[in-house]
Image (cartoon, rainbow, N blue to C red):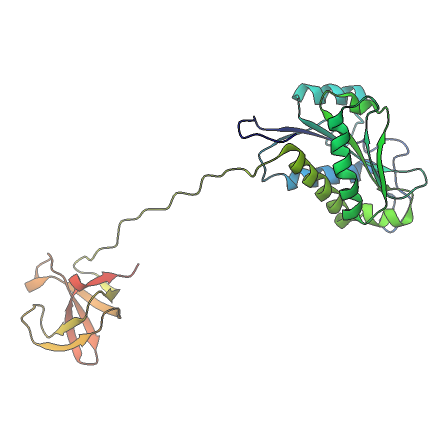
Length: 282
């Protein structure tokens, strides 16, 4: 499946296999103690969802997200079909005296089921650093949903080496990353388009008679006058682009109207500059 530009938002259904209290679904007793399979399945599913959060995709789950109950396979299939998804992925961890990862598709599955499984199997094993047990077919009830569907088995809960990886946050992230990358590839997911924040438009700062302690930048070479008028004696010149502190802003002849003059202290003594040739610093 390759997403087209006019396709509706892809729908993904994830399934954390079993429930927290499902009998027998536990690891050996290792450094992390005995870990319930559902807890690991749930952790991987949540990580997948988090990794897909920036993508334009609708994600649903078929399991009880609290883990309190083990939703029946029939109910999981019904839930899945109710969402009419493009892809269904069931997350599990293995047991039974082996090592490595494997991916299942139904014995009566479709070529799309097989294709997704074949994409994921080598990626998952390589990313997790475990043996690739390959792609297998099996009559698994949860895979009878209408969507393209696969069931993924992480490492073995009863293998010491696999245990160290699958019970760790790092190992679960690797598992999730492999699955998430294949989901993105298969569904042709695109990053969400976000509207850039509109720039905040503010009115340019202006001068006001009576202001004091303002800083300005000279926009031209500016004469320092002894009095507040352009005919007054020149005391010196401030180069263009100079930052200047204005002690006080005054109008001409004590008026409050422009042109405004700024009182400045300089090496030439106390003088005035015409603020028409400056701009305020915000």
